[in-house]
Image (cartoon, rainbow, N blue to C red; front, side, top):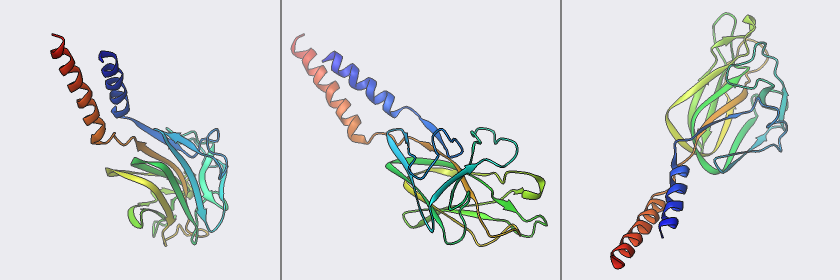
Amino acid sequence: MRMAYGVLAGFLASATAASAATIDFTDASVWSSGASTQTVFGSTVSLSASGGAINFTPFDGGAAVPGLASINDGVGVNDDEVSPRETLTVMFSAPLFLTAVSFLDLFIAPDGSEEEFAIGSSDGAMLFTVSAVQDAAAGEPGFATYVLPTPTVVSSITFTVGGTNDAQGVPDFALASLDVEAVPLPATAWMLLAGVAGIGYVSRRRYA
C-alpha cells in the first residue's frame, strides 16, 4: 500500500506541476508542412486552413526573433501569410491553457495612418485582436506578441486578418508561436489520492 500511495502521489505531483511550453511555428525541424504535428503535455497540436493550403516558407525578416527558431517565416495559407478570405486553425487533441500568441509579417503603414491586425477566435467567440507595432520600411520582421490577461482553456483557435492594411498589398500576417500551459488534473484525481491515503490509514490502524 505504501508503494502504491507513493507512486500515485508522485504521478499526481508531476502531472499537476506548473508547466509551460512554446509552440514555435518558425522551427522547421518540427513544422514543415500541413501534415506536421507536435505533442505538448499529451495534447497533439495540428493545423487546418480554409481558402487554401497550409504553407511554410523560409524566414525573411532579417535578424532572428529572440526566443524563436526563426527558420520558417511562421505559418500561412497559400503563401507565408494569412490573407482576407483565408482562415488558419490550430487544433489541440486535449485542451490546453493559451497564455500568449505571436505573429510575423504584421506591419503598420509607413505614415502610421493604419496598421494590420490579427484576430483569434475560439468556439465562435473572439478571444483577442493583435495590432502591428513594426514598420516594414524599417527592415523589421513585423513581430507582435500578445499576452492574455488570464490563461484561457482552448481546444482550437482560428485566426483571421482584420480589415486595415499597411498600405502595401492586402492585409495579412503569419502565425509565429503560441505559449501554452498544461491543464491541471480534475478534482477526481485528488479524490482518488485521498481515497488511497484513507485506505492506507485504515490498514495501519487494523494492524497496529
